[in-house]
Length: 278
Image 1 (spheres, one colour):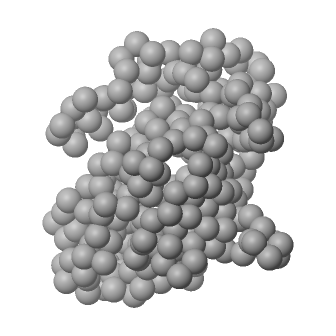
Image 2: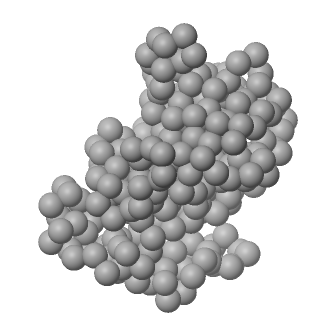
């Protein structure tokens, strides 16, 4: 299935390399040259896809998913030009960050996959996170027909997983978190709270989910773009740009809520990408 979309304010490298997703990687372009930044291959929703961007046209060649699914996945209904304009008006210091990461879009990803992925992400770097997630997919996921890639495991499979076997996949102390959080997801299902604070409180009940991981899950797995995850990079940003003490997380959250409001999560992604690239 091939779908094409006219898109603005989009760059695949920015989207797939900003830390919000871990199952996409650069692919060969049409001419056969490796490493072209605007051709990526990856897995989401149990589908394998090859996506490319050329002259403002996003092409998705996928094993499944309809036109609406991919439109929603890439958040193509949101005007990111307007987002960048509003953020820069609210806080002029963010202007350079929006230019650096001009093509970032927040992907609309599966909640359960984000729950487990960001539990795995704790005290981990992106290359290793990717290896861990691929290992767990190959061990517990179903192969996608016609490809050598695997879908993300179903919650009932990981809920029944043996912790010692997970440990063999180099998942470390996160192994029991993965099993227990999968069991809880099967018990309570998808969160339905409308209030962000109430939603975060529910997510913190999952084994291995702290404030930063909860914010990541809300932003990337539930589309709550007011969530403002604070990791090591963001602490450095807030210290460098605004003079916050590195342990003043409440102050940083209050500042983000005041300055960036309902699109704080988008501001976080521009800032994160900007500083990581620097």
